[in-house]
Structures are given as structure tokens and as C-alpha cells.
Length: 325
Image 1 (tube, rainbow, N blue to C red):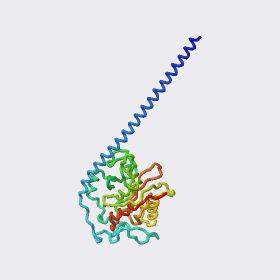
Image 2 (cartoon, one colour):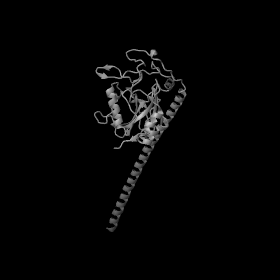
Image 3 (cartoon, rainbow, N blue to C red):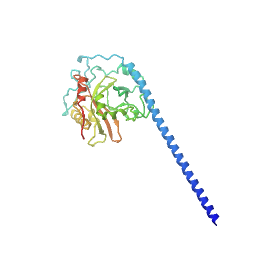
Image 4 (cartoon, rainbow, N blue to C red):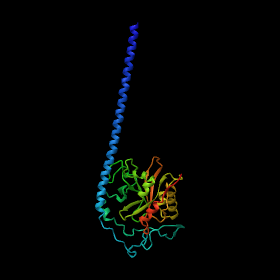
């Protein structure tokens, strides 16, 4: 009887040992699967980043070569064509147009140095790489990238040559028409942890970084442009939210609408700023995602005016302070 009890205990111990070993092997299998999956994801992420950098560097090379193209000369007001959709350069950029339907409107403005909106030689060369390239974004020491335009979905997972890549590309809002000078230019890019695309934007939450990099160059196929940053913050994409930024109103030529949205950008900025922005100023927005799907981080800049110097603007930027919340 005693031997039989010992035999049962022995069988029970062996059974539990087998179960324990089975659980150990199952755990090891799960760990191996997780390791393989993570390795694949990391490899895919790194591969996508390297491929994206390679394409970007190729485009930078093309851009450097193309930038040797001479800049077009200014035209006189008499040379400007007049029609339903054109204004003479005798009406300077930002001049308030007559009243239409009781609302004060801004005029349609042609490019001062490119009256027929011809694609520059520089961008003809860039468009040999991809016909969708319509701009070039540069912040010295921060970013130097091509900008494409098609719809607002195509380049979310494609690079500048149209190849699939999770880093995507920087693209201009599909609603922005470039045949005349737009009052708002809206650029989108992924907030990549590697710093690629618009991953650098998080650094602008540090005052010192902003003060060292306040100027943005954004050239389009029709004219070059230099901008100064006046707001850094987070806005909502949800209508009727108190932090909502209405991009349609910001892009419109209705003065009261533009003033309202510019004030939203200034209010939501984490910095106080003495750089004034008027409804007739051309505004450039860089926008990227944050953890909340209904919010966007935004950097807002305005075109540097003809009577301003970078030295003067830099002095204003050095007086910027973070808001106390």
C-alpha cells in the first residue's frame, strides 16, 4: 500500500514537471515570437528611415545643382496682364480691395517676379524626378526637404519619388492653389521619432531652439520666400472646439476671417511675441500629429516684408518669452 502511494506521488510529480516544462517552452516560444516581431518592426523602421534619407539626399543634390539657375528679373506694372483674375503690381501685396457684398476682401495677387506663373528652371529640373514636387522647405541646420502636392493622402506613406515608405513626404495642402500667390501655405509631415520629416518640430517648444532657428525658407515653383516664425503651439482639428483652427478661413481672402484665425494662432502659441501679423500677410504653417488624434502641433510663420531685415527681426525674436500658464 505504501509503495502504491509513493508511485502515485511519483506520477503526480512527473506530471507537474511535464506541465511545468510545457509552460516553460510555451513562454520561450512566445518570447521568441515577440523578439522576431520586434526585430522585424525595428528593421522595417530603420530600413524605411534609411531609404527615406537616401531619397532626400538625392533630391538635395538635384536641388543644389538646380539652384545655380538665374533668378528672374522684376517686371514693371505696365507689363502685368489685367483680367478678371489679375491685379496690377501697382496695387501692392496686401492692399485692401473694394468692398464686395459688404465684406472687406483681399485682392488676388500675382507673383511680382513671375507674372504668368511659369515654373522656374530650378523646379523644372526637380520635377524631372517627380512632377509633384512644387516646393522646397529649408530651415538652416534643421531641415532641407522637397515638398510635394497631390491630395492629402497619397504622400502619407510615400517618399518624394512615390515609393512606399512609412516616413512619407512633406506635402502642401491639396486646397492650396499656386497659380497666384496664396495667402496661406499649409505643409504637412509626419512627426517621426527619428527626427525625419516634421519630427524636429518638438524642439521648437524649447525657447533657445526657437531663438536660434526663427527663419524658414519656403520656395515654390513660382517664387522664393523667406518667413519668420511668430507662433508655436497646438491647435484642434475638431470644429467648435475652443482651440479649433479653421484652415479654410485662414486661407480665405476675407479680412475678418483671416484676422480671427491669426489671433487663434497667436493665442495658442506657447510664446509671447512682438512680431506682428496682419490679415494681408502671407502665412506659412507647418503641421504635424501629436498623441491626441484631434490635435496638431503647428509652427506658424509670416512672410518677411520688403521693408524688414532679418537682423531687425532677430532682435525681436530674442525678446520672446514663454507664456506663464
